[in-house]
Length: 283
Ligand code: PMP
Image (cartoon, rainbow, N blue to C red; front, side, top):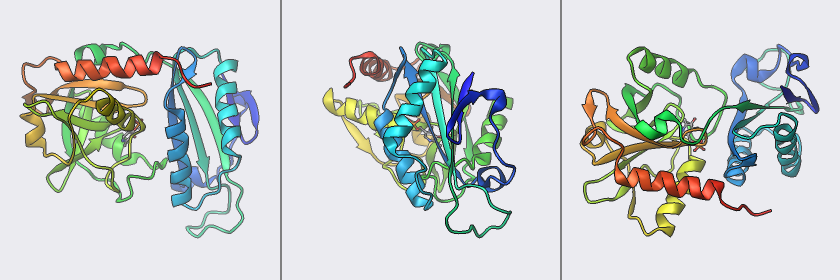
């Protein structure tokens, strides 16, 4: 695999980053993951917008212009012959002797790589998954997409050990989000419900796309938080992310959702999303 590291495209074994990189020492880094389908990036403008917003929130300068990042992503897709998978990019604050205080004028480190994997029509998307429930133990600025992911790593690992596909995190009696996804439910009268964007969860790019699809197809939408109990009693549940698209949730904790099969609204949104992802894109 060819990867991008600090200005050069190199074989992955030749990519090196200092042990003093602040991403490594402090999680002082921001990342994005863009899906690739048919060799084309999906929702990449939204991902780049969020990348810039995350970096600005941490006062890390964008090391190269946005157009150059897009060129790097496209080049990696070509060089690795990637038809379906993801492009990961990360910017860390840079390298300095270890100190919580960072010096002015660091040069930020950009790395990027691709991962080939099946994204469309996966077994999870066809059959749905079970999600565990766990207390959200992360920091309070989850709207910033930092590389500081140990909360999610631990909770997802525990969920897997408990036999679940993923975990929905809970704070103040309300679902915040999935370990790496946005949580949705559908009410008995057919309204699609998801939390409004705030500091408690990442503003999902796939969430944004799904909300747009609800709007353009005349589906009723409600942006409000919901409790685990409401989700367990909902007509349907699903989650969204760049790498899992729209994935049905058929059990939450020990409660089966409706008849335990992916619901019709979820199926409809899956179809709309795939259609948009596969459809013609602006040049
Ligand atoms: N929440 C968290 C915590 C995530 O890591 C992700 C995945 N990036 C999402 C939500 C979904 O965001 P997106 O649709 O942009 O992938």
